[in-house]
Image 1 (cartoon, rainbow, N blue to C red):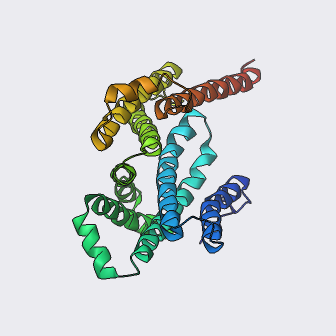
Image 2 (cartoon, one colour; image 1 turned 180 degrees about the vertical axis):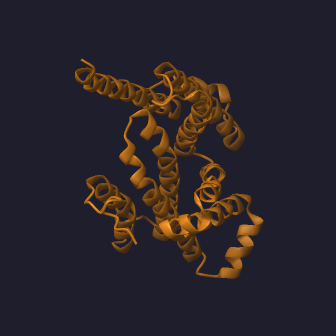
Image 3 (spheres, rainbow, N blue to C red; image 1 turned 90 degrees about the vertical axis):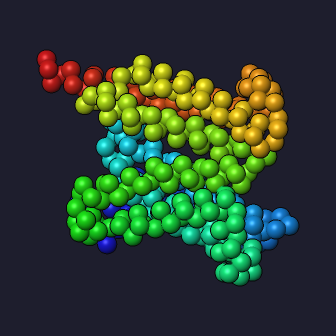
Amino acid sequence: MRSPFTDRAGRFSWLKTVVFVLLLLPGLWYGGRLLAGDLGADPVQTFQRNIGLWVLYLLVIGLAITPLKRALRWPQLIQVRRMIGVAAATYVLIHLTGYTATQHFDLGFVASEIVKRLYLTIGFLALLGLMPLLATSTDAMIKRLGGKRWQRLHQLVYPIVVLGLVHGVMQSKVDVAIPTMLAGFTIWLLAWRVLDSRFGRGDGLPLWSLALLSVAAALVTAGGEAAMYGLFTGVDPMRVLRANLMFGFGPRPAWIVLGAGLAVTVLAALRRLQKSRARRPALA
């Protein structure tokens, strides 16, 4: 099995090492606070909910690897995608174990709740979808399945991310800001894949299309947030839309999605400029 600290050539990789440590931190942080009794009145439930939130973060970050690799011309980034996927699958198992602990490890009751409660059913389907991806995450399984079959199987990650976000939104209900933000990022990332497959060139999508995609994703995020608050809380959707123009309570998810998308656009522009300047002496 390949070390998490080395690249394919067996050389030490700072990128993989840093990412590996960062992936451990959420579990260590919340696990340490749980053992210290520092997670409030219901520490196990707080622990499992925060770990569940990190599952969503990692799934979206995993989706972002390919677009960022292409937009930023950073091929080494692909080295950490598998590591992020394995971490997401590991955290989702910890999340389920935490939920089972809140039910005093009554597996029969847990199973009945998963069947009866839609948001739990959706979350469990996402967990089941992640398991074959985890089981086939090794180089040996890629060789056994073949590259094309392995890629088709791992395209399951797209519906898994959607199911995970729906589960997060339904569980949050009152405060859907974080799941909405992650849904906005997912819209950007999935739309990028569609556009790149049709219009992408060797160096990726044109910069203007990245900027336009960011604006479109932000608008959809704002509309989705208003719709979800209207559905789950009865708040007038127009009030939620107007809140996007009020910054007293911090930036809304739509602005964060827009800012992240435009930041990627700017970084892509700088990277292309850098590459262009690096090629000039060779052409002279």
